[in-house]
Structure formats: C-alpha cells, structure tokens
Image (cartoon, rainbow, N blue to C red; front, side):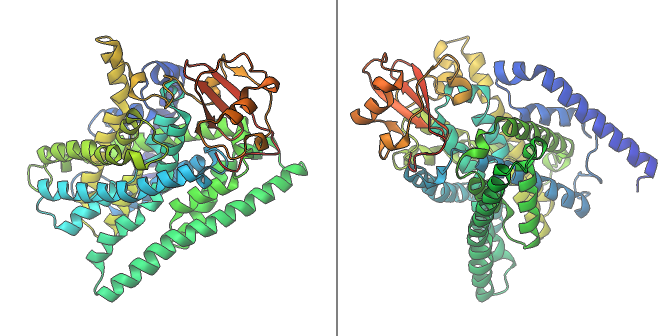
Length: 532
C-alpha cells in the first residue's frame, strides 16, 4: 500500500511526464505527422515503454503490478473504464465528424453491410483458426473469444489514418469517411461476435444461452441502444438548436459539446448495462444530422485537441503496462515465438484478403488500390483491449487473454503506424514506392482531400441549390448535373470537358477532374441533398 506522500509523488510524475510529452510533441507535431507521417499512437506507445517498468521505471500510471499473475482486478477495472471513456468519446466524435446524413446513403449502407457482416465474420473465423493452430492448449470457444476481441477496427488508430496529413493529401474523401464510419460503428457492432462464444462458455443450458444471446445480446446490446441513442441525439440536437437560436449558448459551452455528450451517453448506457459504444455512434450521427455541429470550426478544433490528449494518455498508459513477462514466459501456451507467428497471421490475413475478394460488392470501394488500402488499414487497438478486459472479468482466460490481445495491439499499433513512413523511405529507392501510390481516387487523381486541403488553391464556385442536382450520387455525374455544377452561373465555366467526379462533404461539394484540378461549391445552408 502506497503512503499518501508516495501517491502524491506518483501523480506529480504522471503530470510532469504527460505534460512534457504533449509540449514536445506539440512543438514537433508537423515534423512527426506531416513530414514523416508517424501516428500519435506510435510515438505515445514508445514514450510509455521508455518510461515504464521495463524502461526507466519512473512512470506508473495505474496501481498495482502488471507482471505475470500479479495484475489485480482494481487495476483492470481502472483500465476498463479508461478504455471505455476513450473509445466512447472517439466513436461519438466520429459520428459528429461524418458528413450529414452519411449513414442514410445507399452506397454507405451497402458498404457497411459487407464490412460489418462477411468481413468481420470471416475475420473472427480466420483468427480463431490461427489461434487454435498456434495456441493449441486453448479450446475452440476460447480461441473464438480471442478472435472476437480482435475483430473490430479501432476508432482511435483509424482516426490517425483518415485524419492525418497523408490522408488529407492522398486519400479520397469517400474512403476516409467509410473507414472512419466503419471503425466507429464496428466496436459496438462486434458485440454479437464476442458474446456468442463467451455465452457458450458460461451458459449452463441451451435455453439460458438462447435467452441471453437473443434478448440480452442482440436486443438489449444492439437494437435498444441504437434506436434509443438516435432518439436521444435527435432530441438533443433540436434542444441545442433552439437554445442557439435564442442565444442561450456561449462559446465556452460549445467547445465541450462533443466531450460532454460522450460522457453523458457512456454513463447513461453503462448504468443500464447496455452497449455504450453503439449508443455513442448513433447519438453522434443523430446530434449532427443536419451538419451544423461539424461546420463549427472552433468546436471541431477543440474536440480534436481533446482527442490528442486522450490518445496520448491511453497509449502512454498502455506502454507502461505491457505484460512483458507473459510474452516472454517460456512455458506454453503463450510463448514469444507463438505470439510472433500469431501476430503475423492476424495482421496479414484477418481482413485484407476478404476485402480484396469482396471489393466489387462494397460500393464505396472503386479501385483495387482502394480495396488494398481499406483492407490493410484495419488496426486493432483500444477496442480490442476493452473487449479483452471485459472477458477477463468473466474469468475467460484471465492473464492469457489480456496478454495475447495486448501483443496483437502492440504489433498492430507499430506496424500500421509505420506503414506510410516505411514507404516514404522506400521512395528514395524508387518513386513508385512513395506512399501516395498506396491509394488513389477512382477518377485517377493522386490527391483528394477534404476542405482543409482541397480549398487550398482550389477554384471556388458560387453556392449551389441541391435541388439543381436531382438525385446526386457520389462519383461520376451526368451531363445535366455537370451543367449545374460547372455551367454559366457556377463561376467555373473555364473548366475543360473531361471526366468529372464529385464528392459530397456535407457543407460543400468537392469536384475533381481527370487532370487533378479541384473545385469546391458550397451548398446552400438551408438545403442539403438527401442522397449523396
């Protein structure tokens, strides 16, 4: 038991360490993320390892020891709540960030149906088989519990891929949006895959299993939080809009809107023992259904700043508690050789082959390179730890579950975090290895960013009424829609007659031609397309 003086000293060291890191990272963030394309998570994880128990041993954020058979339930409870808050805020933030009415688009619904259905199902089956082959001491159900923990794409790590400088310069907006949406929703949508083997282990009869899975799992953990959270988000949006129209909301309150809403939803649905992650997503998209919140630049930048602090905190914490003794334990079933082989198979085959095979049925993926990008960048992170910790409280595998999942999270964070820098270094050997060739827009342009990058140097036409475009779908446009976008009244008549593609970003349309020219036309604030 630590004395009061020791506790105060530990808290002071934590504040000093995190504050120093954030200051140094902030002073060099453009070099780290804008030049070398390193993610915040990789840098924070390395920082945590360097100062943790296997490094300088000066930073211990969580109480207790995390060595083999010594981590205690209070420590795991703290980490579980920490990961729950981090993921919940990130998921809700993703829902707010997406273009208005994004999930109502037919192309998006079709893409999500494949990504959350066959892609996740195959991921669970493949990873479960890999686990049984390499960690044969576990039974099949235990292997599928491990696999289900690793099935979701992590919203924290995915955000660093879809929001970074590289993504803004080189990844088409529709690919960034679908990756962000998938990573946000599948942490909650992965619950059925996780509950199925877990309930088969703990249930005493088939009747108890069926009741628990259908009522407690699908209905209470999926349908109820999705429907009720969407209703809550809609009510809050209407209430907030009414308050703003009466000038009841000051600037300071607007800044914490996303974080406050995330904490409210997490607390409310946790008390109900329902799925707070799926609730955060649907509340997020409902609260910004008309796109007003995502247009508030001040609120957006503040929320992104909060996200950086949370991301640094969670990955620094993870770096200090990585279970090295479990990984390097010479006794089966968990040995470092098996973990390395398991990690290699999971990273390479969990998602990539399935996305490549099913790309023709995923409407938002339009080229082979886009399928390769979407299939590869499905990182596993905080969400996997969240499910592993919840499984640990059910006495499923205990230390082994956290040890195996944390190894995959460690591997995924490093490998996915250095993929783009690796290709950047490789470009010195051959220009084709430059990371910008990892993905390209469907129209052949090499750069396709959102308003933050495309508005720089882009032609900006006159605002457009969405009714002029009829039922606009993203991608190539008809001659009538082209005339509406680039006709006499657009201010963009000087554009050539080549192939044109259009991407709906909620508050504006991004228009690209086959030569890499970019234009932006803002949508009338009072009217937005219902389909894009």
